Every structure is written in structure tokens, then in C-alpha cells.
Image (cartoon, rainbow, N blue to C red; front, side, top):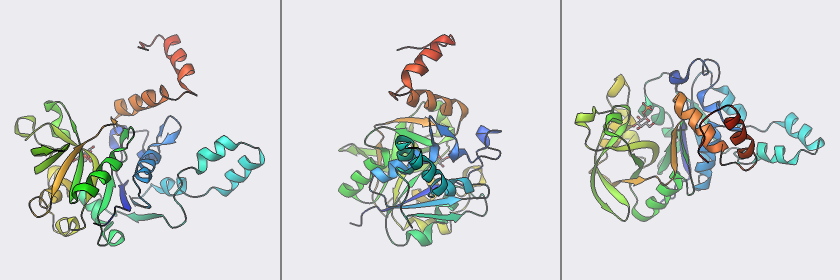
Length: 293
Ligand code: G1P
């Protein structure tokens, strides 16, 4: 079985749910505590053994490329000033030379189309996909959980989370079969079903391990929900032809593409940081905000 070495990060989205903050700043560059959102996804992928990072970008997303580049002037200044902690924070988890690849999705045709844009770089091997605005916080990370499951069972895998039925219309939903060893057989996949029509409340959280055969399905995939080429629809066409399983995430999920999710992630992660938590707690309480310790 081929190991998972490459990961695709679709980052071409316009971030309309979080305007006007994302008018000139890529939503993936918005900070959660002191790191941009995309940085967490890279760390999660790296912890899963990924060594090739493929960003599917769009116009106005140049800051992402700059963020993962070496910043010579800044590093030199920090070195001369003896600011070791800041320097380490800046250089830790930067992709090495040639490890980050950027390809543009020229038209906003959907998530499926974005992943398809990476086909020549992926070639003939299984790969991971991470949607960075879904921040999944925990150890092991969601991608590592999928890679571990893949090494046992192979095929295609998706990370899932149980959600309230009224929310199914915003997500990809699994039609589940039997669960063995913590992995649920995927019998069907539906993108954004109405609550009454959803086959379950098992939501796709934006972490995938896919076989390269997905690209042939994406190639001729008709537009689906929202008139976009949906990854979910192309994955559904692999069911039956290849093994397909869902793995629940053990970490906590924050939908950072929404204003409330973004703010919650900042508070939750800030309150876990020993260097920030005491001051954050105090300032929250001084501001009269309800805080349960
Ligand atoms: C995408 C996927 C959907 C998944 C969701 C997770 O939807 O198409 O299956 O559940 O991400 O956030 P989008 O948020 O792009 O509408």
C-alpha cells in the first residue's frame, strides 16, 4: 500500500461568510491566537507524515505563499536581537525547499474542481485533503487518524462528526453502513441534504484520504449543490468500486469560516495557552464576560 505523502489545501475560496475582514486578507490568513488558520492545517498534515503541501489558491491569496516562505530580513533582525522564541515560532513548521507547491484554481467552480486542479501534482498515489477553515484541534490530529486508518484498511476515508439534524443542509452527510473497529462503512454520500432527507447526522468535517481514481470522477462530474462541482458527489461515485470508510474525529472542531466559530476558536485555544490564559481569563472577567473556569 502506498503511503500518504501529499496533501491538498483548497484555499481559493472568497471567504464571503466573514466579510468585510476577508475583503483584502485571505480568510486562511486570519489569526487564531497568534498563527494564521492555514498554519494549523499545515501542522496537522505534517504530524500525519505529509511532506508535500499543495495549495490550490486563487487571485488575492499571495499572502499564503509569502507566509510559508523564508523571511530573510525578519529572521536576521530577530537573530541579531537575540529573540530566539520569536525566531523559533517563525521558522517552526515552514515547508522545506521545494515542499510547498502552489497551483491556481482560475474559476470558482467548486471544491471538487479545486481538488481536480491538483491532479498533475498528485499523480498516481493516494493523498490527503484538508479544508483549512475547519480547525480540528487535538492529538492525534484528524489527518493522522485517517492516515492510520488507511494503513490498516486502505481505500478512501473521510473524517466525520455527529451534528444536530437541523444543520445537515450546510454539509456533506454520510449514509452509514456497519461500524467495525471504529470505522464506519460509507454506503452513500449526499452534499447539503435537507434535514428531512439526510441519510444520517454524520457530517463530513473537511478531512479526506482519497485514491487517485477520484480524479477520473472529478473530470466529468456534473455540478451539484449550489451549482458547484462537489467533491462529495465525485466521492459518492467511488463507493462500490473501492473501500470507503468514515472515521470519527477525536479532536474539537471549530468552523472558522463563520464569525462565531472563528471567535470561539480564538478564545478556546487562547485559554489553553499557558502564556496567555491567565491574562485572557482576567481580562474577560474584568470586561464582565461570563467565564466558567
Ligand atoms: C465543504 C464540503 C462539505 C463539508 C464542508 C465542511 O462545504 O463540500 O461536504 O461538509 O466543507 O466544512 P462548504 O463549506 O464548502 O460549503
